[in-house]
Length: 314
Ligand code: NAD
Ligand code: MLT
Image (cartoon, rainbow, N blue to C red; front, side, top):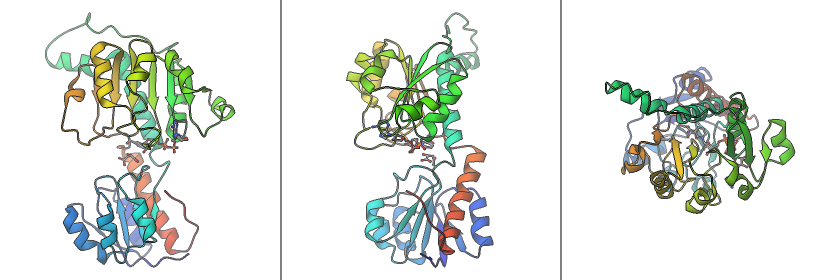
């Protein structure tokens, strides 16, 4: 299939490389990251292509107003901010760049694990406040500890490989990845009920779908070791935030490292402010390398669509 793209709108902060690739291939492009939802609905009929990151919510309202739109590109992995069903109904192609930010998200996850083991952010904060709290911050080594990885896809695998170099034992679960494949990257596959009681740390790397919503909840915290530490750099809502707060308060959870939240930005900061919580504002993919990669990848996919090359995506 060959697409004719007369004009593409970039409505989020996407690296400048994206415009460079589109323009050098003769595709007219406009960047406007300041549109309100109403303005986007009014403007969208002018465009036949749309490129977003995560700020723009491509709702059914936007899609239904988009009389000329043929293709939507997400410069990132998840397509949660795009109503794919509404797009499909209108015959609009939705594409993403799976893999472009895998290493950055994996490294951010590892940074959370390491920071939790030694309470680096809190220790740093206490020094900034003029204290020299050597006794307060007693960490524990990662060597010999067990890391549970839920979701053994692109990011889960890279996290496993990196944390193994700290001497961690890696065990995991994924309904699609077979045990033999997990074993190739030294992850012992096991069902969740067997995994929970063994872990010292757990990190989730699944999409947010009905099967993974509140996957980690009061019941799960109840069967984990006391002091288990939890990391979510995937999607807000995979861990039940209210259950996490209860577990942090009781000590059942010994610390959490979260990059993603049910509501972004969160308005209730109780969880974020908990002393055992390390929080970052959805920074997993925020590296210059990843942002350049996803920008180029999405632009090249648009060029391929124009040239009739085979397409892949969400
Ligand atoms: P992926 O598709 O490569 O891997 C996801 C894995 O989850 C798949 O192997 C799938 O089989 C598995 N899975 C699905 N349902 C499951 C369940 N019920 N239990 C266990 N596993 C299940 O995706 P990825 O690229 O590794 O991304 C993982 C997550 O990280 C996604 O939610 C993505 O949106 C998110 N992400 C976040 C950032 C960030 O900035 N924080 C950056 C990139 C990706
Ligand atoms: C993604 O889905 O790729 C991530 O959430 C990263 C992002 O775009 O910020």
